[in-house]
Length: 62
Image (cartoon, rainbow, N blue to C red; front, side, top):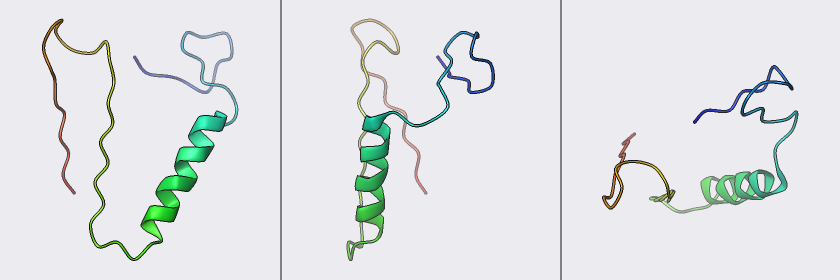
């Protein structure tokens, strides 16, 4: 489930640069961080992880 960026012939090779969608989201995040907002909440939703039919929440607080 992890990518790697050193071996182009390896499994889950991630390439040599960010995908367009990653570049866009990085800019969105940077704009939010550079804003006057005092609190920012980021919710990252994925499918296909954890037990079938159950929700799995991984929460990290800074």
